Amino acid sequence: MSTPVNVLKFLATGVAAGTLAISSAFADKTFDRVELIIPYGPGGGSSLHGRVVADALEKTLPGNPTIVVRNVPGAGSVRGINEFNQTATPDGNTIASIASGTFFSYVVDNPTVRYPLTEFNAFLSSPFGVIMYARKDQAGGLTGNAEEDVKKLQENPPNYGGQDATSSDMPALLAMHMLGIQPRVLFGVSNNEARGAFERGELTMNYDNMASWESGVVPLIEDGTAVPMFTFGYVNEDNEVVRDPMAPDIPTFNEVYEEVHGEPLSGVEKDIWMAMLAIRVMGSKMFVLPKDTPQEIIDIYSEAAKQAMANLEDDPAAIDILGPYPQAIGKDAQRTMLDAASFTEEQSEYLRNWAQEVYDVQL
Image (cartoon, rainbow, N blue to C red; front, side, top):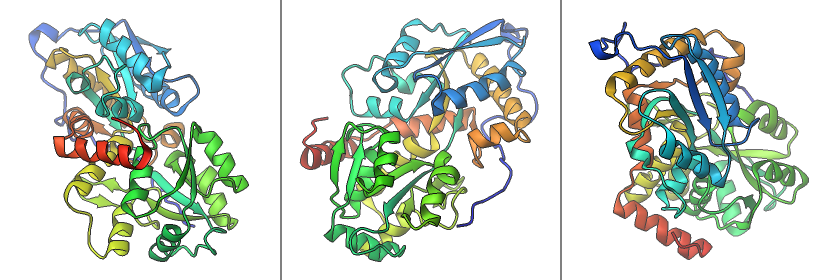
């Protein structure tokens, strides 16, 4: 199984080349202490990503401030982002890290959400891919041929474990639904628990963030335990879904859908899937400033992020955390956030019907 070894590249297409022109009111703006709220517990992916970026921003923000990381876990990021929205002032002294859980809680109208996600100001977005894989020894033996394997799983539903239908499991569950696979689902299972259960054969279908690709998934494929089904894909600059840079040999969900159904993804299903991609892949980890932040401060942070990413380009530790994915900065990051958080009524109705009919969950 080949894996890419290309060096991480950064795109700063949302920031004009050179130094940004800052208005005279902010020309001498410096920061002494900045608080970064991470709405997840220490030691997880968001915390590792946040600390790498925070260390880099300390060197590029005006005044070289100390960035104090504060983990505020709870309710799938809702607790921390509610606090950020309620307490952060629009002066650049408080920023937050958001992730897929922040988006899912918002788009399904979780009643505990007290933040206006689309009013935040994103200045950095870090994509990260997702892969679906299955036990090779199920359904009479899977072969690695996506079309054949999907048909076997349609006839022999796999066992899948996840947190719930409205969390970060939603894209995986929707993908199986769109392919005609009706898994037997056990909810209340964490990602780590699901991986262990998959390795023991208790679960037969799973997904992983591509951060686990080389260390967690490739060994399972190489020892014959698992076969890759598809990646969620990656959206390029032309808004086309292409293969994931970390696993270019693995077909995307779009490719598998077309093989199975004989026609490409279209209509509301395509719109829903593109929204899932925006949330789960393109906006996997994101840094935001609070609502009402002046454009000049957003520009300062965007320029600092551009310089910070350039400084990390040859840092092996940063490459391990960020992967081989271009980083969206400034207006591109904001566009990613809006793409992920803005659902049409048709899309919302599709999700409500799916959740109610398949999982008896009311959105």
